[in-house]
Length: 285
Image (cartoon, rainbow, N blue to C red; front, side, top):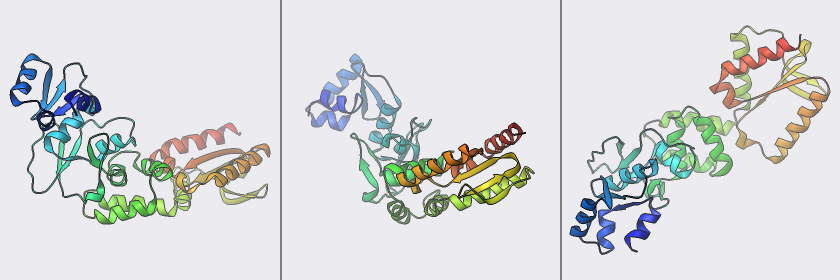
């Protein structure tokens, strides 16, 4: 493959080894650098002059120069699990190698080959390991794991990868998330809601109130406010989703003001949940 094709597939980036294997001599590489046709990003990694230095370019440069593997939020972003790249990229190199990479978080760890993928000509941790390692360092980690379970992976796979990588930073936190994901979070979400109501001294509610043939999770009967609690989304199939919509429509038509909160909302934005409940109660008076 010639250098133009390599660079086209790699965001305009090429390594010295790739250039030489394509027939470009060391002297020719030097000439291109002197002329400005190529710019040195890191040792042995170059960018074409007509290409912008983007976060993708920076990640390629970090991985290629260290001969490592992107991990954590960097890998999650590369897999499409995050919409924005992290402010600082993360790269894993083997324990036997000592690497300095300015502006990059370098982790020395031996990864199982099953936990390394090659995506768009870049080594990154596998999607399951990327989910596990990212979920414990971003603010919406539980939601990220929930989305991944809905679209990309399964709980048994995540658990197997977790067991294979015990001892890594964040392992204990990941175990807690996996337990929550396994239980579905619905009963836990109800307990959290009860705690929030007590903490903020919101009274007049009852649990498991029957109306229209359904059991409402939390009801403010005198105000006509019904609160429904959802667990992790990956536990809800299409039938359950449609059933919940049908149930909610019946309650609304019967005069209930229905609020729905997920496990993620209750754990990540509890103050917003309380505010919405208070507004509903005040609006019913």
